[in-house]
Image (cartoon, rainbow, N blue to C red):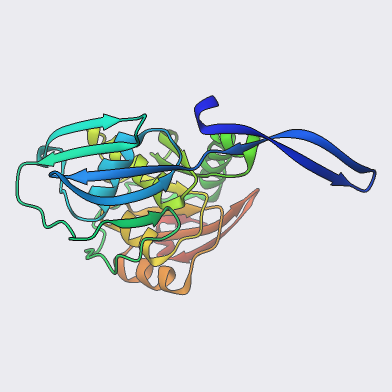
Amino acid sequence: MENETEKVSILRITERGKSKVKDVVVREFPLTIVLNNQELVTLLCSPTDLECLAVGFLLSEGLIKGRDDIKKIVTDDRRGVVQVETGGGVDVPVKPVLASGGGRGTGFLNAERVSAELQTRLSASQFFTLMESFVQRSEIFRTTGGVHSAALCDVKDILVFSEDIGRHNAIDKVFGECLLRDITTDNRLIITSGRVSSEILLKVARRNIPILISKSAPTDLGVRLASDLGVTLIGFVRGKKMNVYANSRRVAV
């Protein structure tokens, strides 16, 4: 956690007065991904799990399809550079891009309708339990309030968990770890702390994940795409309440 946060001096003001204290904030770190010796993108991220983030980003952008596409990965944590070499030819944009985890503006990604179907429908209490476990895992958020979280789950447990200053980055770190560790995403669930935009929805649908759960709200296009692509989209899961926005057939009421 020390690598992800930093102490700063602040002026704290309350109804009782003011005081100079130390506060903990999250670190923001530039990560440059080099694909086949060409600089592809610089992501503003949290300085952890950089290899997973790079691989997850390439996977989400459709630049790699699986682990077999990767011939070599070299990570320089100090400089913030991950170099990835692939086996086949990949078209790399001529100009490198600076991107934050909040949105990349890369356009719509192709996605097919989700084919994965869970063997049984999940009850509302199962969703509430998963979200409770998810929230309890987020130590950096409890300390700083400055990160997003994402997790891959089965119907009972969290399998992969990640935190980052960007909601896109947090999900890409999860998918990157899954690819590197050969963890399947089929018939699994994704939980995110962030807003579900069209880009987030498409990212999840491309991994054939049938259920996406969020603490936050979806956008209108996120809802429409979830409906069209067969993803069960659940938002505002807080306490014992939640909203099912699309494909409620997987939820037992």
